[in-house]
Amino acid sequence: YQRRVHGLATAQAQHACRELGELLEARGVSVKYAIHPVAGRMPGHMNVLLAEANVPYSALYEMEQINPEFPSTDVAVVIGANDVVNPDARDNPKSLIAGMPILEVDRAKSVIVLKRGQGRGFSGLENPLFFKPCTTMLYGDAKSSLSHLAQAVQHV
Image 1 (cartoon, rainbow, N blue to C red):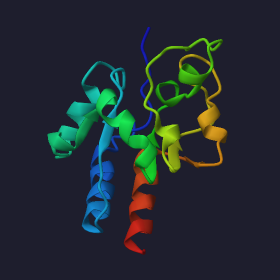
Image 2 (image 1 turned 90 degrees about the vertical axis):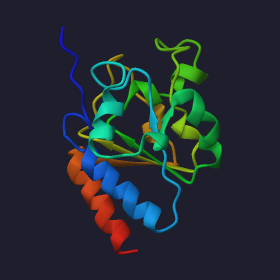
Image 3 (image 1 turned 120 degrees about the horizontal axis):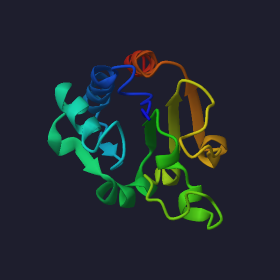
């Protein structure tokens, strides 16, 4: 069984992610990188990719650290995640993933989700986050999508 990683790792988008973060920081935006414990192929995978892109370790936040901050977050950008940001794990006791810890991005004022397509996560469940009024879906390769977001920020 081989687990396929989508988003940041597959697209090798860690440098584009850092570049978007730097552009936002240059405009006075506080940028934090939230990492779910099971993100990537193994624990710490996303940390390694972001370190490779020279994202400062001090900007990386574990789920327990960042979740309390989402209600005061203007925009959360989700790259390739599905089940680990599915609010049904928290809100729906009948869900197959009930009780699974999630990044509570749905509590941010606005969410931008970057995904290659409309597929479901490893659980096979539809993610209600993707249909919330606060969520914008941006389909495509994560690296390309992040580059487009960076270009949009440059023109603001």
